[in-house]
Amino acid sequence: MNLTVNGDTFITEVSTVADLLKELAIDPVRVAVEVNLSIIKKAEYASYNLKDGDTVEMVNFVGGG
Image (cartoon, rainbow, N blue to C red; front, side):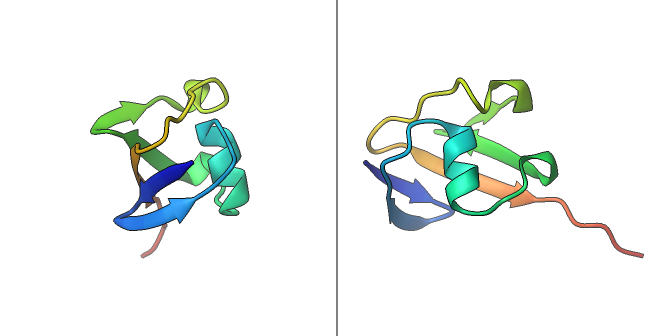
């Protein structure tokens, strides 16, 4: 499946947001995910199915002082 992830072309065989985050080694607790301009709730990461051509944007939360 071909996706656009944060502006870059990404080829993967995974089917859900949760699996994509796992493949990219991103902690799902510290990230917000948007697919095709719609924000995906964390509770839906495991059940939200990605489709060929989807555009995925991810923003990591970082702490600082």
